[in-house]
Image (tube, rainbow, N blue to C red):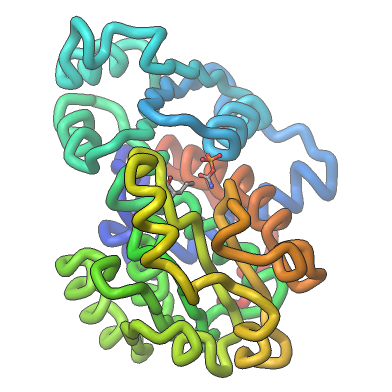
Length: 321
Ligand code: CP
Ligand code: NVA
């Protein structure tokens, strides 16, 4: 079987379906052992992670710091104000130096290529904590959340209503790998990246599922099990806010839209949430899984850190995926 030890976690595209399933299984296992059974389990004692953040974060930072602590290791958070990176030291040199201190590197960046450069120079694994292109950690948490609610993943119908951004790019890869049907509705001009569409379409065909793109939100949500959205204004796009609010008219997830979905619909949002993209009555509905989804960021990033550093066999039975 394949190992994930010493690999970079930059995009789900690089991972086989069975590897992604392994990460979801381990996440659920850690949640069971550490949260439910209150077990002290510290396989990463003495290990450390250096976290480089070019952008703000609540969940990604805290889930990784606290997850690393739970596993017995140490996390160092480095904001752009703290280190020389980007000011008086190159990303290449920073990657080489941090590799001498830490067992893992973690980056939240603008360009995905910054992560590629970091990974090329680093001698330890690099984890993507969000770039303009991808947010793979978020999708692992989304999948654990849906597995817990529905009891399976394969065959679920997901609908994305919103921007063709980093989150939907990773969702497209993840659904293609694990065989979930995905319909993506974006306004004209906000479609997902062309190469990501190509890659995800191929993956969907391989797993016997489908990826469908549309400009009609109602078509996307029709009989969907899960409705997913995100902010219309991602970090770094603040200046486009007024244009975007205008262009995304009709894309707000609301009661009328949800009526088109399957009767046992659920709602996901990576957070932080703004009011434009989803009404309060949906966001705070019982069927909105956003709080479980946020919590699962912790158990999933723990699974990723663990598997990049050592072999691990879960103690619980593999969940149906
Ligand atoms: N979902 C997510 O990545 O949230 P943060 O920006 O708070 O890390
Ligand atoms: N698309 C959002 C996600 C935040 C977690 C952004 O990139 O800002």
